[in-house]
Length: 281
Image (cartoon, rainbow, N blue to C red; front, top):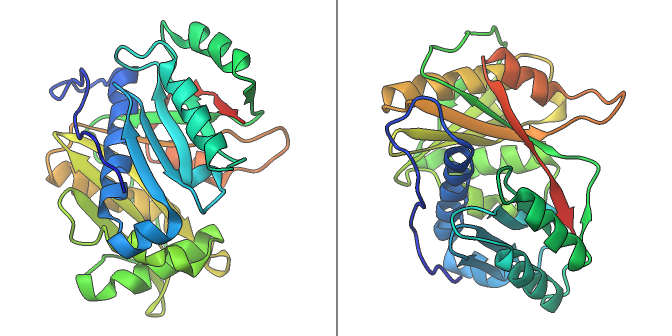
């Protein structure tokens, strides 16, 4: 796994109303560290690589052809004028990947980068992602019939297996997720039903900023308040850790498509910050 730099670009760490760059950067910081946490044998097996591109971050798993693990994040950040797109396309195509996402941050450079994306033969997907943010107010406390608890080191694999199952992903990915338990900056939570792990979520806190992600509950335990309770617990613990604002994101629902994640996030008092296009090969 290749890690070139671990550096924030122009991030405001003292504000309570984050900018677009702030919201993009905490997501990048979380994914950078998540990639760094991967066990070496796992990273080698999936072909995990990252590259810092003067603002944007390229993360790819050459042997997992899935958009979630092959992403250019923060296109247009810092001094990037589209060079990150060309590098990502070359790397994705060179690895034989067909399902990479290239994400262009909203802002002054977005239109120029979109033109660059079209020139590279990329296509915008119908589903965009929605970025949410919230400040330091306490979160509403939803009711749930599930138990929500912080994950102990001995429970790391149970947590990871439950979450990967909730996403419908193979259990071979569990060692990667388990590696964040106990890692500096990371906080992992498990949802249990009668003592059995049925889901969970994660939070990354760094320099007064918190990113919430990797949340999933298995089908048999859904519609019982678990996701809302996981959000509330992370917000409460993030505030205790000194977080001044929180960020998360989810895909925007298409017409006539239910999207409980979107509703859960809004019920936790997150506000929509912006929509972000996904471009693909």
